Structures are given as structure tokens and as C-alpha cells.
Length: 213
Image 1 (cartoon, rainbow, N blue to C red):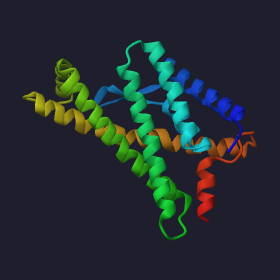
Image 2 (image 1 turned 180 degrees about the vertical axis):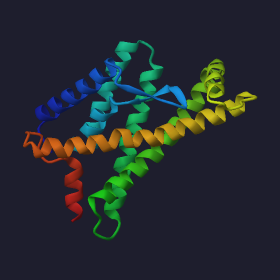
Image 3 (image 1 turned 90 degrees about the horizontal axis):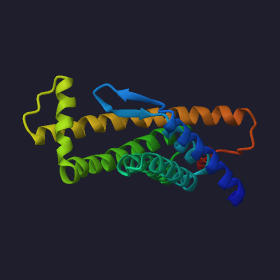
């Protein structure tokens, strides 16, 4: 376990990176529901997780969430982002932990694949529940906006139930794609950073893989 000062410094760096990317709106709209954005600010959160482990990823995500909350003033958007990122991290961690317990000599790609699979599943479940609560329980008046967005892409929504169904389905597709947007660049950056011989040390994901060998 690295010392607290190094851990804190890394969290500060990755948290600041995530906050800055959020502030400059480094986002790509999801064509089917343009109010959903592929958020590149998730990459530093996942990067912190892969380098420092679950605790580092969760603390960095919390710093990111606090920055978003203080900036936005409205807690819902930042909280949904926090739920998306933390569910991804926890699911990925769970998938890697499961793979370590299975017999055989897995490749690093299999660790990454099962981590992404479990991260994606938990993210989709968490965000489906969150969006259901937002649209059906807490802010049902927002359903009219969802209908407009769905009709704009050619879907017929005759009632609130069909609007909710299509919104949750397309949001699930969005979150499944976002796993690749968040994880693949993060791991590519880790390999590049470590090849440059920085002081980051060995990445957590590589250490976990090494323990299985």
C-alpha cells in the first residue's frame, strides 16, 4: 500500500483532470438521445481506478462528483454521473475478483473483458433504476421532454409507458457503449504512461493480473 501523501497526490491530480474535462465539456452527444453525452471526463476516474485500485478510483470519482456539484448547484446531474462511474468501477472490480477465483491461466485481455462485462452490467442496472426513479417517481413532468426526443428520431410514443420503455432501452444502449469509451482509452493511457518511466509505479490492474500468473 503506497503512503498517504502519494495516494492523496494521485487522487488530486486525477480528480482535477476529471473536473477540468467536465468544465470544458469534453463530451460527444449520443445521436439517439442527444441529451445523453459520452463524457471523456470519466477517463481520469477509470484511469485512477486502474492505477491505484478500487479505493483510488472511488475517491477520485468522489472528488469529481464534488467538483460537479459545486459547479452545477443542482445535485441530480452530478449524482447520476457519480452513480454511473462508481457502478462501473465496482462492477469491473467484481468481475476481476471473480476471474481471479476461477481456474486456469487467463490472459490480461480476459481480465479486461470480464471486468468490462461486469462493469457494464452493473452500470446499466444502476442507471436504469436511477432513470426510472427520475422520470417516473420524482420528475414525471420530464417525460414530455423524453417523448419529444424519441419522436425526433422517428419513434412513436403514444403514452408515458412506451416513452419510459424506449428511454430506458436507449439509455441502456448508451451505457453499454460508454463502457468502451471510458475503459479502452484508460488502459491505453496506462500502458503509455508506464512505458515513459514515470513515478506512478506499477498499475493495479497489472498487479492483479500478475498475481494470477
